[in-house]
Length: 192
Image (cartoon, rainbow, N blue to C red; front, side):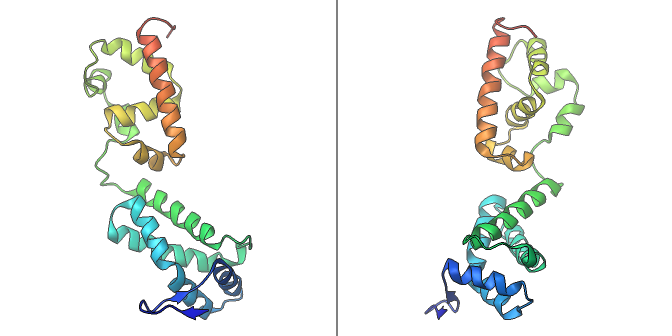
């Protein structure tokens, strides 16, 4: 492994990272330190892109390496060591997002506790509130959650994907499908 000029870290390859993870299985602390030097910037950047808070990203990055150290024996070499680390980081980010109590958006549980009139009043430009409420109950649970979190809770699709632990593409397709179904139901083309 070569020392990278200027940044004090190591310049490595996937093969180096893979080898270091395999050495960590034997309890090699030097391999752990070198893996950290090689990958910490990428793990931090990834966590920051999800969490949007530097302190949270720093904590997730540290937890990622602690988890990697504890679970090194489970690592199977497939030539994708960074993918393994990023999977750990992603899972920790999503767990953190679920735990955050000070999340500024309305949760699905909070929306469920509201009176139907209050819920529908949060969705603007819909005069037929009872019809909308009936249409919402005709949706599947996942579709209803996504629509309510987006339209009544003012959450972005990406935030919903993170909160529910499902891919963004799934959230987008379920949202579009739900809106089409709601439109058909509101137009009287379907039964409630």
